[in-house]
Amino acid sequence: MSDDLTRLSAAETARRVKRGELKAVRVLEAHLERVRRLDEGLGAFLRLCEPEARAAAADVDARVAAGRPVGRLAGVPVALKDNLCTRGVETTCGSRFLEGWRPSYDAAVVERLRAEDALLIGKTNMDEFAMGSSTEHSAYRPTRNPHDPTRVPGGSSGGSAAAVAARLAPLALGSDTGGSIRQPASFCGVFGLKPSYGAVSRYGLVAYASSLDQIGPFARTAEDAALLLGAIAGHDPRDSTSAPGPRPDYLAEARGDLRGLRVGLPREYFGAGLAVEVETPVRAAAELLRSLGAELREVSLPHTESALDAYYVLAPCEASANLARFDGVRFGRRERGDGSLAGLYGASRARGFGEEVRRRILIGTYALSAGYFDAYYRTAQKVRTLVRRDFAEAFRSVDLLLTPTAPTPPFRFGEKADPLSMYLMDVYNVPCNMAGIAGLSMPCGRTPEGLPVGVQLLGPAGSEGLLLRAAARYQEQAPFPECAL
Image (cartoon, rainbow, N blue to C red; front, side, top):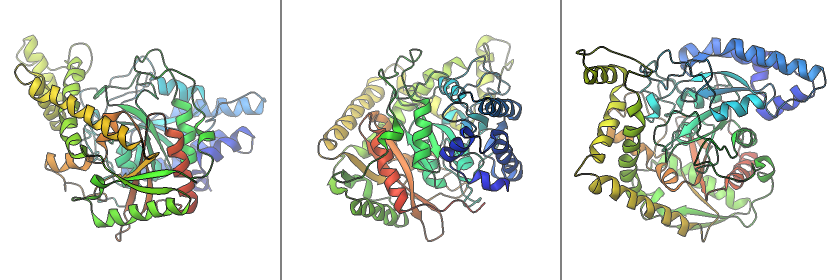
């Protein structure tokens, strides 16, 4: 049956395709059929790339039949968040402003996926310009949580997380500025990894906050996350922040046991605001790691609460600068306004940008304005330095940190209508981005209502392999049941 093919892991799919036991075309059609059947109610995709994916699948099958080499992701469907430039394919960032825009080039990660013979199945829904934590701020439609359609999938990469959870694609890419991979991974019961800053090229990622953004994988297994990260990571001279050096072998690094691993539990992540139905499975996950040979220690990250305040100064400031290019002149939506240039700018932005994007641009513009720069932006940068020092100090005594991914389970649509309550959902996520370290969310259980709960692992820059090893050993002992859809 076609649904049986959607239950295969990405690693197993690629192995079978390479051996000629399974046709890439069959794998693709099984996933496309599932998208057609389920996605109208789910809203994970904004558009599909069926002709291109079918051509790629046919090429993979022809090369396998001829005995020619194929890439590590041969025959594996991969979904792409809609802020990743894809040559000739509409790329909107979930915004009406970019409706109809088709980039003339591929993002670096898209190039690398094509080179590894992945089947790029479509572009996934997202909060507009990646500004949101629920995918309610998409200009097109909301994405629903596959585990409970009355609840959000998280954001801003909610479409990618939902697509993987619902088996519409075995793998997906998202971007993470302040938790936009890890929080939806937690809400949807899948693996989501934010790499260290510079580990994955940002070339072709439509920027939100350039010093915080990173592209990373969604998957249903730790092995699959390692496989996808290995395909997209590595130095890229077109990205000045790209880390030099050879591409790590994350699959190899994910092997091995956890004996002697020192895991820190930051006391600031287990205080007021953490729902008991989240804390219970997270602490149980820590005990399971202990049973596998890890040593648990309590640590302190004293500037955790201040990190959230600083983030919501720095990210809007960078967004204000990055989104200044969207003016209705060079590309994107154009409105006439009052006939003047300023009127064209104002009308195009007012009608093209949604409320949350306008709010963050205004916050950033205000914080960068004369007379306020030192009070807000410069102070926030000083706090960022303190956050980095907190992590550096903690990693002197532990190898990894274990925390909740989100303070609550997935919430209902409209429940966080107040912007401040929505921003507070990022409290456990933004310090990782502020410090440029690696972070991973993995499913660790369910609430009494049956909603997924995620546990977050944080490690120093370059520790992705260690995070994946801990996640893989954990998953072997506590596999998370797939979505019932």
